Image (cartoon, rainbow, N blue to C red):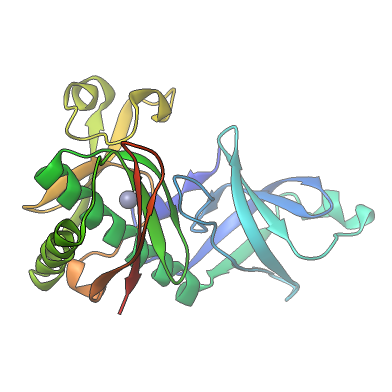
Length: 243
Ligand SMILES: [Zn+2]
């Protein structure tokens, strides 16, 4: 298991860890990491892993597999060095500029989904975050200009209120009783865990979630709907940008 340091501290930019496995020439598994492993529509972090002898590995992607985070590195580690790496200490540095953009767009999507849930009872059917935009697919039958203007206005009120964004953990059973907390279908929730993580934009909206967020909505900046698309009779895609 890799301990996911980013679940409790979204602003952790550097960390120390130990190498537990080198499964192939371009992959390292650590005992703990602050590098976000791709999932839930949020892209992976990038960054560097620095060994005590000064050797630097560029991490181009991190992904999850059976409780482990695989740090995919840009260059091949020679076969004779791989086993010697196990047990070594590394210092990790994440590409903060990229991560912070993901955090701001991710939190903006919470506000979008909160607004459409509270105003139109719409749920999320899909979504993706990028460094310069983000989108959600929503169970909405229609989305005219008037509705779009209302959604934009309501989203930016939440930004201007500079609300606190908190994470907390709830017992799985208790969380599943609260259908307002999950906007995705219940069978997409993480399996095999007793506790589920809640991201709460205090006084506005709370959701089950495993990603990284800013701690105050004011950090997001102004949210603008840049594009909408019809994805079926009861399904609309809404793209946002931050300005
Ligand atoms: Zn989230």
